[in-house]
Length: 94
Figure 1 (cartoon, rainbow, N blue to C red):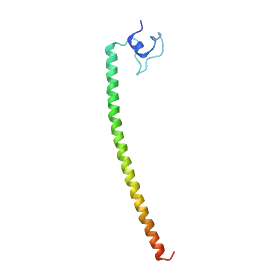
Figure 2 (tube, helix red, strand yellow; figure 1 turned 120 degrees about the vertical axis):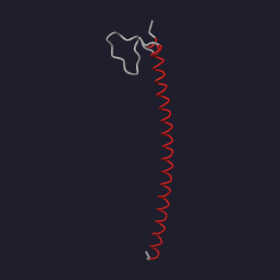
Figure 3 (cartoon, rainbow, N blue to C red; figure 1 turned 90 degrees about the vertical axis):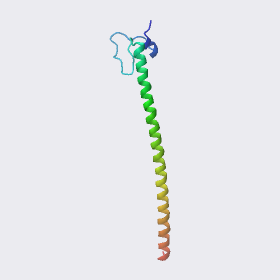
Figure 4 (cartoon, rainbow, N blue to C red; figure 1 turned 45 degrees about the vertical axis):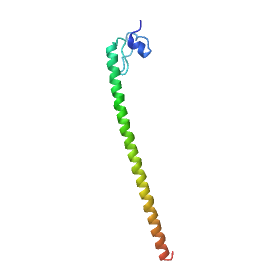
């Protein structure tokens, strides 16, 4: 029979002397307790990533609002400068 971890990973059990397990893989003799612990660790990581994603989305939203406000200020200043320079040209007969 194929051990639980190998069956869960969809693999045959590793051959003796095969490549070492990666940190994200499970050894062939992984117990259900170890599987549960790893699953809980991954759930914790996912929950943390979800919180960070929400924070980043909020930051992006705030940055977009600030960008829109700055662009509006630039448009307003450009409009005022253009109006002022047009008035100066009229006064000087240009």
